[in-house]
Image 1 (cartoon, one colour):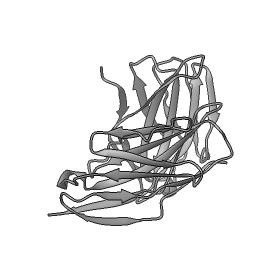
Image 2 (cartoon, chains in turn purple, cyan):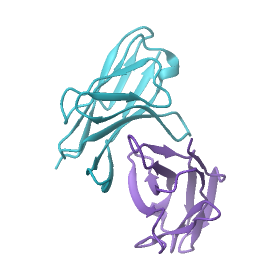
Image 3 (cartoon, one colour):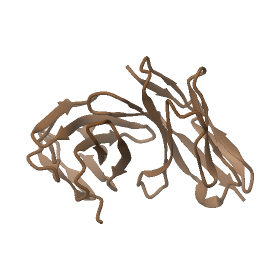
Image 4 (tube, chains in turn red, brown):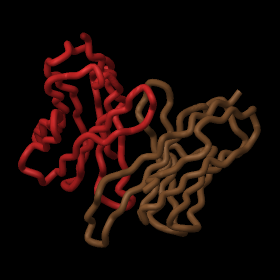
Length: 115
Length: 116
């Protein structure tokens, strides 16, 4: 069974600084995908970034990058130049490639950006 | 495109009542999912469907039922509501080709359900 672990219940970061949100995963599959979602206080799930298990390059999307270390089974999210609007809950999720291609979510990390 | 539409956005139920949470998508996605999110927690999979007429249980299916008579709609039925079903419910959809190509997941805006 797949499992996602986010060990940081809450994080603070100063505006304009970079922050890393940790995510480790457990799977015996060779083919899988890793996602990060942002959930602001309004509640919607906003897709941020995706990394496939066979992708050799770390994914980047604007200020977001995913530090993918396959041997360590980690997929940390790096947010550069934090903004006040980045304050939200962040979820790491894994898609197990197989029947249903279900997403498994971690418990999340609350990020607060200080001015 | 409307994407994934969930109705209602909010609902208060009394213990023992039943209701259906509606989910509709207009993207011709073949895969659809229902998740619940308890306060301060991640999302847990209730049921999913890989196509019309096919549904399967997820991690936490007890107390729920689903149907998928069309590609567009995937309603979630709560029978005999219990306080433990107080949660935010998210519907999601995705498209997978026969060769396994995927184009991501689209989430609805959620239904906040309180059972009292």
